Amino acid sequence: MNQEQPVIVGLDIGTTKIAAIAGRKNEFGKLEILGFGRANSNGVQHGMVLNIDQTIKAIQTALENCYASNPNLEIGEVYVGIAGHHIKSLQTRGDIVRQQNEDEIRQEEIDKLIADQYRTYIPAGDQIIDVIPQEFTVDNFQNIPNPIGYSGVKVGANFHIITGDKNAIRNINRSVDKAGLKTKDLVLQPLASAAAVMVDQDLEAGVAIVDIGGGTTDLAVFYEGILKHTAVIPFGGENITNDIKTGLGVLKTQAEQMKIQFGGALSDEAKSNAYITIPGLRGMAPKEISVKNLANIIQARMSEIMDFVTYHLKQVGLDNRLLNGGIILTGGGSQLKHLKQLTEYVTGLNARIGYPNEHLSGGHIEELAKPMYSTCIGLILKGYNDYENKNKTFENNFIKVSGITTGQTVQPATAEVNTEAADEVKVPLPKVKKRTIKGLMDNFKTNLIELFREEEDAQL
Image (cartoon, rainbow, N blue to C red; front, side, top):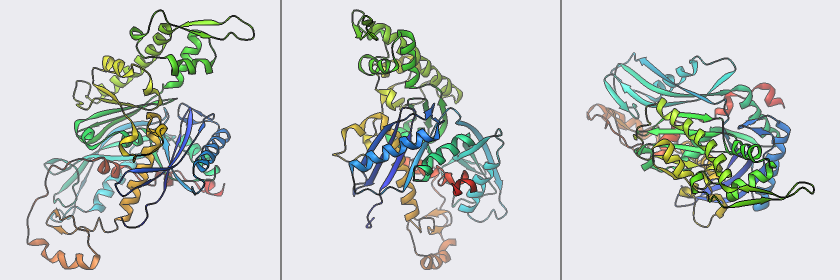
């Protein structure tokens, strides 16, 4: 694009930290980081905003730090991640019978099919966050990535529906609003993290993204180019810290420090004769902690989290080595030593650590290549995906030639001339189309925040 790219800001409201990152794409399509700020998070537990005032202060501190890193920044709108154990998902199936079955399938019909899924029954107090089409069918043709341009009597699709608690969503919205910002969109955190650490080959091979945060572990499973499953496991790094605190009788700050400096996820790899000396409280004698005991506590909790991952993979029938891309571990908790080996042992799948530097330009702050910033980088990528889609005004006005898309964008006047030739060529659409991360992100609903904006919120 010739015009200057916009600056897009991701805001990750986590249990342990709140991070604000401002980025802009360069001419090579890579993200240049223009500002970065973080703050300790006090008002959030298990991914949910419980204390709005404390959360507002933390967001404002993160913003101040972001401005300090680049005083020229102006931040008004942000893309915000949403997680928490209130997030659930379900699979549905939808079909419509077409009246004009000789005509090509139009975008309006697909929109109606998706809109129908918002009437799916969910428990009271919950709200549908996202309806993501998986694969379409047209009559007897199956596994169609995009049915526009086909002809047929019946169009259907499998859908992945994500739901969340209305109050939890409203609390995030209010915290951001009262911090002086406008929420451009809410994005499910595992999907944002997936966008930051995956490449198109991962999507093709099939992977499970396991994002180990402070309060929750988020899971997103991709197979044959589509999102098969999402889940939020209600355990994260904070649970490990609390286990260490309780098990070894130390302060929470000491437990966190020991976890980061000396912790490992495999007790067999810990030296049995290594000890950590903790200063005694108020004149008491110093305490010696065994590194092996520390590793035992961490391994027990991490094994439990990985058992949940295996359970969810079994739920969708993808536990028996069908995911050729294995497991990608990301988030702050993925930096634990020997976690990759423990993951492979518990799940039976290959594992690697996912870093968000795949989409970052050279010369960025080294800190930002850490897995704990995957969600925030993914939020910026989602923002760019929205921006680029809206900029291609005529992208949906493709010339149609009896069901085949030429791929040329045209002005409306030109489109009228070309439609006369539509009946002359009879070429079916290709059945198999390569799935890409960009195509997948196109399916994530935009402007989700409008669903939750109430009149009273607007007046606050």
